[in-house]
Image (tube, rainbow, N blue to C red; front, side, top):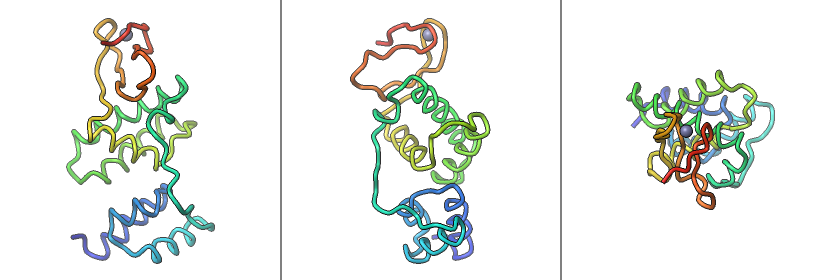
Length: 156
Ligand SMILES: [Zn+2]
C-alpha cells in the first residue's frame, strides 16, 4: 500500500493529465471527495462525472485515429519494457512521450488507460507487417479486414 504522501503525489500527477476520478481512486485509494476537490483546485473546474467509456473500435474509427492509437500502443509497450514502476506509472510515462511526439492528437488520458488495458488483456496486439515491417495494431477494428496502413497488405 502506498503511503499517504506517495498516494497524493500520484493523484496530483493523474489529475494534471485529467485522468478520470474513478481511475485515480483505483490507483491511489484516496477518497472520491478529496480527489474531486483536488481536481477542482488544480483545473478551476469540476471533474466530469459518470463514465462515458468508449470502445477501442470507436477510438480507431478513422485512419488518423487508428495511427494515433497504434503510436500510443508502441509508447506503452516500450514503457512496459523499460519501467517496472507499476501499470499506472507506465501509462503516465507512455502518455507523456506520446503527447511529445503527437501534440495535436486528441487522444486523452482516459483513452490511454483504455488502450493500455486492452493491450494488457491482449484484446489488441502489436505486430509487424510481414511485407513491409511496419507496426500494425490488430484486434482494434473487428469489422474490417485488418490491413497494414503503410503497404495495404491484408493481415491474416
Ligand atoms: Zn506493410
